[in-house]
Length: 81
Image (cartoon, rainbow, N blue to C red; front, side, top):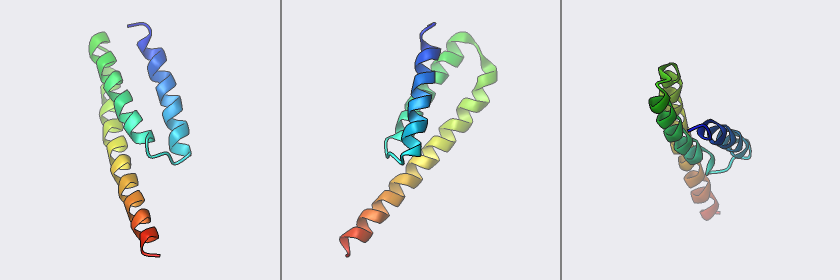
């Protein structure tokens, strides 16, 4: 379990870079990473991280849905040109 915080850190950094580059994969990767965080929180009983985990599940899911909707709208607009 000692490797998991390192992996989660690397994924968080990479996900942030993807989001900055407006990659459609950023928020999906973030959601996957939150599953890893939840695993770590439960296994180490680090309950103080649970509010952050819940909040990020909500934010990442919202952003994923919003970006997918915006991408669909852009594709539809391009198709009508």
